[in-house]
Length: 427
Ligand SMILES: Nc1nc2c(c(=O)[nH]1)N[C@H]1C(S)=C(S)[C@@H](COP(=O)(O)O)O[C@H]1N2
Ligand SMILES: [Mo]
Image (tube, rainbow, N blue to C red):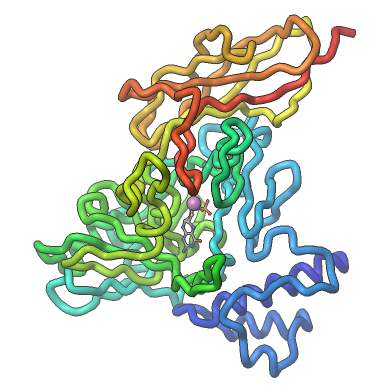
C-alpha cells in the first residue's frame, strides 16, 4: 500500500467509525481493532466517536469519495461529493446488467460496514396485529426467493442538463446520465415478510429506515436516518428485500446485507442498509417525501407535487462527451434507453443536431423496469464539432421531449440530451 493509500484508508476508517456510532447491528469492536492497527486514532478518540462523518484532515490529499468502499477508477467513475457516477463509456462492451464494480453509488453520508450475522430487521408499528417481528438474514434466506432484473436510478440523474441545455438553476448533485444501473436482484418479497409480521387490514404506509449515519442538511438541521414511506399497495406488489446483486451477496456500497428494491421508482425508494421497517395505520412522513423528492416550481402547487414515484424516460450513448471521430469512416454508435413507465419500444438517433432522425436497431425487447440496448450506424461527412441525439418512446407512447419541465431540485430530467463529439478531417 502506498503512503497515500494508507492515509486514505485511515480517513475512511474514521469516517466509518463516525457513521456507525449510532447504528444498530454493527460490530464497533472490529472497526476499533482496524483503527488501532492502522494507527488512525488514539484510544481516547476511538472511545468518543463523533456522530457525523468526519471531514478529511487538511494534511493529506483530498479524499476522492469519502465513505465509498469499492475502488473508483478514474476511467469508470466521476466522483461527485459522497457519490460516484458511472461513466457511460465504461459500459461499452459490458452486458445487459451493470457489473457491481461499475454500478453508481449515491450515499447521503458514508457506507457503513455491517456484520451480516449480527444484522436484524425489526418490523414494527400500528399497522401490525401483534408486537414487533424480528428477522435475521438466515430467516429471510429461508423464505421463498424471487429474482428481478431492474434499474436503480437516482431521481436527479441528468440534473446537470437543466443548467447546460436549458439555462436553468437547480439544486443537488450535478449528475450527467450515469446515476443509473441495471442489476439482477434476488431476495424475498416484502409482502411475504409483512404477512409473517402480521399485517393489519388498515395498514396504509410502510417506512424502511437505513442503518447509515443520520443526515444533516445544508442548513445544519438533523434529518435523522434516511427513510421514506412507501404506500402499502406498492409495498405489497413487486417490492423486494434484496440480499443478492448479480449473483453475489449485496456489496457494502449497495446496501449490504439487505436493501429495499422498489422496481421503476425513484432511487431514494431503494433504501440501503435497512435496519427497521415501520408499518403504520396512518400516513407517514419524512423529509424524503415532503421537502425532498416532490416537484416544486412555477407549474406546481406551493406544497409541491405528489411524492415522486416512477422514474422518467431517458437515453444515453456509450461514449464520453467530446468523443473523437474521423470524417469518412464508418462507426456503429451504441446506447441504452429506459423508462419508469414500461419498456422502451422505439429509439431514434440524430447525428445532425436534431435536423433529421432515423430508427436505431434495438438489441433487446422492451423490458419494464429495465433498459434496451440499441445501435445506429454513422459515417461523419464533415470535420468539426457535432451533436449526437437519441430519443426514446416507451410502451405508453411517451416520447422524450426537446425540453424538460423545470423543477427547483432538478428531478426527473427527461429531455433529449445533446451529446457533443468532435470529428477530425480524414487523414
Ligand atoms: N440508507 C440509505 N439508502 C439509500 C441512500 C442512502 O444514502 N442511504 N441513497 C438513496 C439514493 S438517493 C439512491 S439514488 C440509491 C442509490 O443506490 P446505489 O448507491 O446502490 O446505486 O440508494 C438510495 N438508498
Ligand atoms: Mo438518488
